[in-house]
Amino acid sequence: MERDILHCDMNNFFASVECKLNPELKKYPVAVCGSVEERHGIVLAKNELAKAQGVKTAETVASAKSKCRGLVIVPPHFEEYLRYSRLARKIYERYTD
Image (cartoon, rainbow, N blue to C red; front, side, top):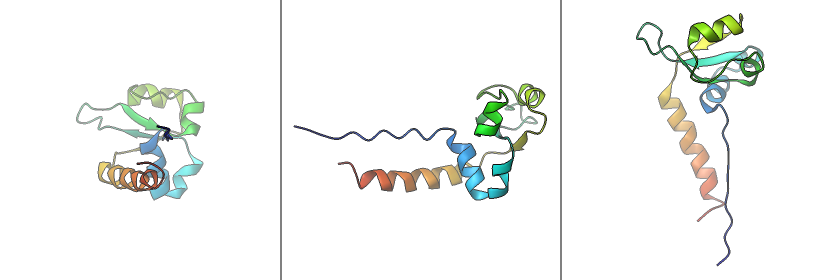
């Protein structure tokens, strides 16, 4: 039995969704981060501009800001990520069993 396999790497998905929701962010280095006040202040995702300046997933917000002075910090919007993930899944379902 022959089958096709679809692989889609949605790199930095949270940051991509944030830039889709707010296109103005595309001009800036962006990191989606947990709450520093609640002691969850780490980078969950970053866009390519932030990555180019050395920002890494899972590093502290303070460390990311020290590497990237103009870094725009965005709180996570998990409901939106779930919504866009479901939309992507619908596309995949058109090409897979």
